[in-house]
Length: 247
Ligand SMILES: NC(=O)c1ccc[n+]([C@@H]2O[C@H](COP(=O)([O-])OP(=O)(O)OC[C@H]3O[C@@H](n4cnc5c(N)ncnc54)[C@H](OP(=O)(O)O)[C@@H]3O)[C@@H](O)[C@H]2O)c1
Image 1 (spheres, rainbow, N blue to C red):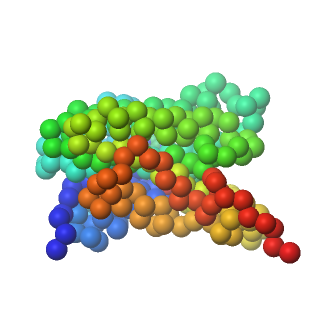
Image 2 (image 1 turned 90 degrees about the vertical axis):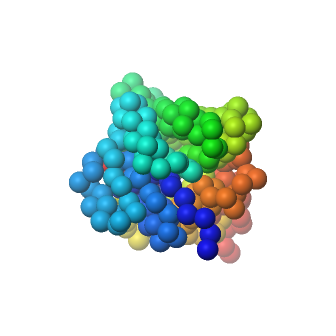
């Protein structure tokens, strides 16, 4: 039987975060879910190996407190940040408040998690996985703020990977294309919107939360023990592959 581990997942109520939690629990691991509203995590919270701790991306102390609480319960092997938001607006219509909200929810929370995880994992090592976006790889119109936040995540994992490699801590990110999740519902809920979104991806379809979760789970675990500093596209080709339109 493979080694069982203890993982923290921030954003455990989200589509990708809850799929990841379900996969890790199914594999026999222990999971601490960091969520801003613990009442929204009732389904997974019923599992005997699942603990729920309040954690808000906009309250950095709550992220550190969540990690410390989890670590006090049992050594941490990995941390994934699946919290995030999206803003589809051109720069000239984006307010200061919207910019700060996007940067804080996506990038600042990731930095705070890297900082706290590095402190806690310096002795025993571990794995940290963040979530970037294909919008940081390829220019998509109306994505200026979110593309900037997610591009920051790729730089963050590369530098943290270099700093903490001697301590045995790996830092990586996944970079999803358009995934059928709560935050993107408007982009796929009608047949017309789904078809338009799907044709931007070389593989001709949108992603499922479970597909992104599987990649995060792999990066968290020992099978990816020789992988660090990477941002891996899980995106149907959106970030890097152009295909010819069907004739
Ligand atoms: N879906 C896509 O197409 C796509 C594409 C590229 C990248 N991503 C990234 O993938 C990751 C997972 O998103 P998803 O697709 O699973 O979307 P989702 O279902 O909307 O999940 C987003 C998660 O972020 C949490 N969150 C938002 N603001 C928060 C805050 N201030 N404090 C704590 N938690 C907060 C949400 O909590 P609540 O449940 O409390 O709202 C939810 O758990 C995100 O980083 C997202 O940016 C998604």
